[in-house]
Length: 373
Ligand SMILES: *Cc1c(COP(=O)(O)O)cnc(C)c1O
Image (tube, rainbow, N blue to C red):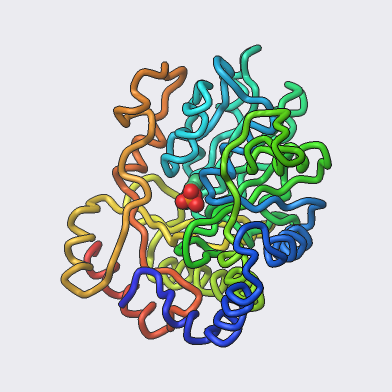
């Protein structure tokens, strides 16, 4: 059994994928070829925003978003400590200060009241993460940002395809960023990412940043870097986009089925409890893409060992909050991060991909309940 099965998808889409690659090899425009522009148009319309600017990775998308918004030395950016390192790493790389706020124990995303508590005159942006494929608290955080006159940059690396009341992730704030890393919900066959925005001026700044700050050849009004998406990767993503709506449906159905079965057999959701076996809670007005299907248990090491013996792979997202990582230890912590700390010791992710069959899923559920029983 695979934690994420990329092979089944490849077998189903290999025809269009090969044709797309072949076309790029023949026209030879490996950098900023026509597939890049086509992908950007299709993704902007998928998300429901005016502009998509593709980038060389999700990390570079976050970096470019902050550069386009003028985040720099000494600025503060409010974010989550319970995320992949790239979220805070890019803030720090720009000389800005990642200000960690605690997460909500139900959604795993930053708690709006905690955000409000750490705003200062130096706060330049808020960067919520739509973790595990579920959108951040867009209304409350959007309102806090609006009152403070600062932008929100969504780290939607895990939530591409998710939605909240019909609005899609990456189209919920000034700039939304995502990743096309192979194991993400919309993954390519290498590194890639994108920024989404409704603002023409931000889109134009993003286009300059990803191309060495250039507005026309050898003319550089701003600092940038080499952040372009390869044409070959764009061709692969275009082929995969054909199946993506269907895959989002399958991901949602599989995630919901996990939860329904676990709850039917006695598990609580993160809304009901803080101890014991907990499964995710997704409100009715949200659609998660379950980038990860992550549960909480009291004895994680024992569960991982038991599942390993049963041939079921697992992963931990994430075992250490970023404020406790050596690279971030020198940033002051301004509030208690106890929820992040607690759940980082309790979370474990189960196999999750659009092609997970019911038989495998039932086996996983049985073995988890057996080990936790
Ligand atoms: C994967 C990920 C990133 C970085 O994306 P890359 O494409 O790997 O650079 C950033 N933030 C989160 C939350 C992620 O999961």
